[in-house]
Length: 121
Image: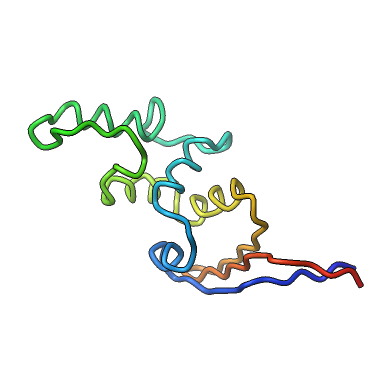
């Protein structure tokens, strides 16, 4: 039997998740775009391309072009996350990470364990 050890924390919001990990909002958007299983309801291409196209329509409001996920305004980024759901977005992010994770959730509460080691018994 293998016993896994790790760092456990509880989050009720995606903001708490970011506060307790080294992940950023841009990481979640990239994970969504790179997922084979997720189709965004209103995107023809990637989230980044969708935001770029939208901003081109309003050059007075968005004079600087967006070239990276981290440049996407927070409100816009969160719209994409809400479209597929926070649970799904976080799951996609953790699946792409090199670290092993346990993600349990019940309604609004998420329990995460960042696996840091194991012992054979």
